Length: 114
Image 1 (cartoon, rainbow, N blue to C red):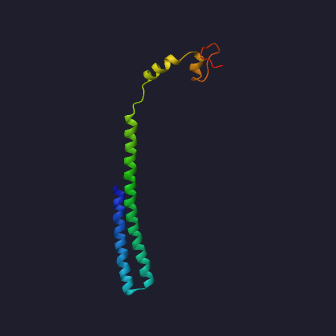
Image 2: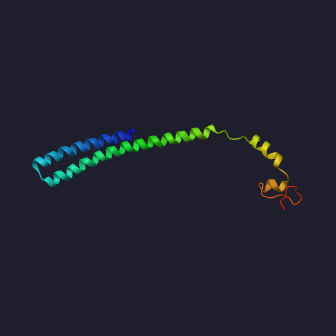
């Protein structure tokens, strides 16, 4: 959980406690409708705290997944340029094949598909 999330949780908690105190005071000395409104408002603060904890869990899970993906991509070695050239060099047959990126051959090429 980040520092900002913790601060928000503290503020939500303080606001919920204050609204709960006002709810009790309204129930004793004021109207029931106002007490119900303040009770509802104090519950929304609790909901906000629960939401912050769920977001923190989601962020933690996402960070773990990203780290796992990074580890997975680092494990697979990528072939170096000389290795690629050594594999592809025997396949080369004509100049047009190189310039066409392997899509076409010269008319005189023995590998020309007819």
